[in-house]
Amino acid sequence: MVNLYLLPNAEEEVIDSYDEDIIVTNRNGKIIKASHISGKQYNLSAADLIGKSVYDLEARGIFSPAITPLVQEQKKKVVLVQTKQDGRKVLITGIPLYNESHDVEFVVSYSYDVSELFVLQEYLNELEGEMTRVKEELETLREKTLTIDGIVAESKSMQQLLKTISKVAPLKVPVHLQGENGVGKSLLAKLIHKESEWRNGPFIEVNCGAIPEALLERELKGSTEHGAEKAGYLQLAEDGSLYLQGVDELSKTGQGILMKSLRQCNQNFRIISSTEEDMEELVQSKRFRDDLFYKLHVIPLPIKPLRERPEDLSAAIEIYVEKFAAEYGMERRLSNDLFQELLQKDWKGNLQEVKNLMERLVAGSESVMITKDNLPLNYRMDDSEQLKPLEMDGETLPLILEKVEEKVLINARKHCKTTTELAEILGISQPSVVRKLKKYSI
Image (cartoon, rainbow, N blue to C red; front, side, top):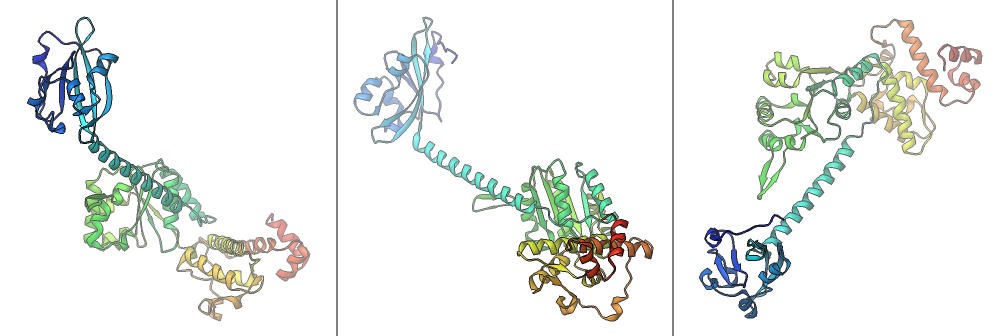
């Protein structure tokens, strides 16, 4: 501590304070200066204290212990809890002021009611506990929402999309995902977050279509309720990613609220948005604001529906059958005719529909082999549908047939130990099986 020395006119230099309880005593313990509020905590006035000895006040039980003798003895700053006559506690600090001989000439003391400090400490403890709870909830929510399961990328279009994501993810540029319901927009949004510089921050998903217009601004910017501030989505996304799901479901008024909120915030987060409809067409038809379009639609990432990605459809069917068979502790596989029939369906619900149906088939079948008879009635094809052609990114029929044949062989190979079993299941000769396996390097 830096030593403090008093000049000869030091007594005149002590500044009286109206908002601090300050008392100055000389080396004999006599009070020579007191601020106007000093003495109130002892039920005395400042004038009553002037000229009194701290030793006498201690002997009378006004307070205990006196801090002046302790400061003189230790020749340094002393902090202690003093007990008043009514039993209440006071936190008091004594500071020594030295003369030229380095002796303690005066002691300056100031005090605070400990009860006020206890209240403040309780508040800080509560605040710390609340912050800990919020952090734990956010961490739990983050772990829960960042489990990426279900991205299937066997097709050229999806592989190209993932390459684009790997390039733009590290940049803070807004990304817009467009595709039908169930194509995996939320999964890809989480992938963008996990491959970005903000991966350690929160991933905040906002379902724009689920928030009433009257509450949108409050949910985005936060509010004050019962004296406590409730953070909005824009605050929660700080140093992370804000995923605006279904912005095309906002009304024009809602779009205006979103645009205003984004303009007014510091925006220290990554913006990812998604729509089912083409945003450019929405703008052209005057159903979407131009300014919000330019704000969100910087890097557009269109996602093809599953019916236009047969490779992904084939892989998804196998993935979900294996997933649910393992989950329910069953041995289940699809018959080849059922597998080929499933490849012909429209799958308007995309991956979500595939996942739903595979779970129904696995859980509902009573035998190891799942056949067309296990299909729900609304999924069964009539004769005209059986002739529906496959379209695989403009490829020729022979190439399409080869790819389907390869998929069927791969699927069957997983469930057969020998080429003889394969031949029996596929209805072809064993030499043909060997030749085809060699052809596709299976």
